[in-house]
Image 1 (cartoon, rainbow, N blue to C red):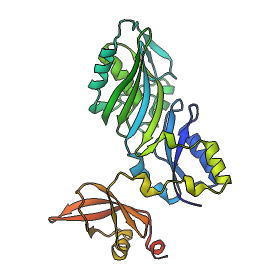
Image 2 (image 1 turned 45 degrees about the horizontal axis):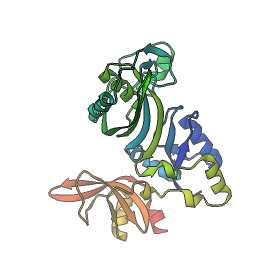
Image 3 (image 1 turned 45 degrees about the vertical axis):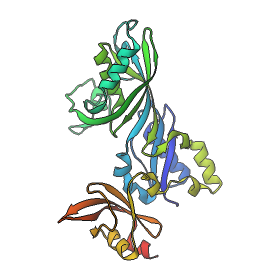
Length: 305
């Protein structure tokens, strides 16, 4: 079975696990994992890992995300999105575009965001959504997110008023919570009424595959053509190419001196023999820059073969 990553297009109405199960069936393997869930009502890019590339999960999951998000002002729901029960209404006929634009600008930078009660966050051994479905509520700790950009693309005044936005943010950001926070700033209830993830790291929605397209690629023997090489999924990271001796050391988890300029603290893509050896970190030690493997993908035997 070829290995790599898949940029899949999740339609609304399917869960993230539905997508994983479907791809497992198409490929005929259980070794498929995802790199970040989308709510059932949301759509867009889901990056899946096939085979040994699941070892990259923590790095691909942490990639920044871009979303198209529609915010509806004048309505609040118990889930903070359009799927929940309405808990508050307010007249929005006086809401103006400039007020919304300022609110979005206030919600950029490093923010402390409270995850929604209807989310998969764990609390004392239970998911928050399970607690919420049982009618319970708990105090949820905030999470730090970085919002690089919260841009207003279109505003439709009225009652309710709607704002189409684009959000570029760090992994783990709850856009539903951002919608509610935008409402608080303008003094109105608000919820997220539409969400499409358009980018995960370097993977864009324009290149995402539908299940039908993946099935056809498998039938035509073109699976390798649609798989993304692991190093390409991290294409914007610094990379170093190791010689044979250094490559053997890296595949055994051995720290080696950096042989090219790299900045300490950065994660690196390490290549050897045209293949991804490992993800490593540049470290400063005793005045020298060292390269420490963090996740090895290619073992010594495979390197020698």
